[in-house]
Image (cartoon, rainbow, N blue to C red; front, side, top):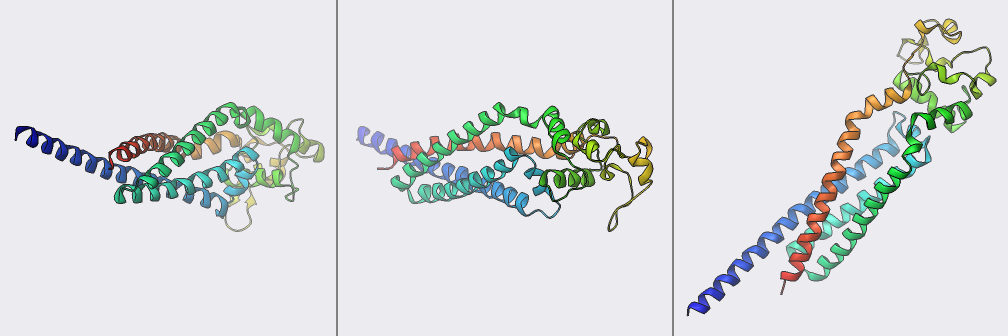
Length: 258
């Protein structure tokens, strides 16, 4: 009788643990589902954003490719979160195993993407952007994607060059426009309404520092997106942690289902 009671008690405790794991897995997968939805939203926003952020990203092929990576990862996490929730609630071993294998592949892919981002980080440095601007920026040829993108950046963030207006010295822009020290997009605006008007365009083009923007665009863009960069980094760490826990819970639940 004592052995029977102990066995029954052990079975009850095991059942309670299995039930706890099931609902914990549901919660974690729901968080993965939300994370995937967020990444999808960010990716779609960058692609359709009317303020020109798409053109800013398009200037660097690595960043532009990253947008589609974010979309793909968001879609996969969205699907996996849904499958994980269904597998946990229905206690379906096939769904749980399929979920575990897919999330393991995604986890490894995210680690590989992080390693590649670290390896190619030199493509996001001031020196890289300065070199590219000196060689490829043409000034007023907006049919050129690179030039049009930089014009949009300088016009949007009220900045000039990568580091400062000095970046245009010895550049393709100066060779094409020898009478101008900086492009007109570096000039301080007198009005933001409609087509911009400038305080003293001629003086600005001739190099007058008092009527042009002297802050570099690298610092201006980093300052603007600094908060979002930290949020994105923190979110990535949270998502990776949730994925690890979800894999552990999925395997525990898989082994506990009779």
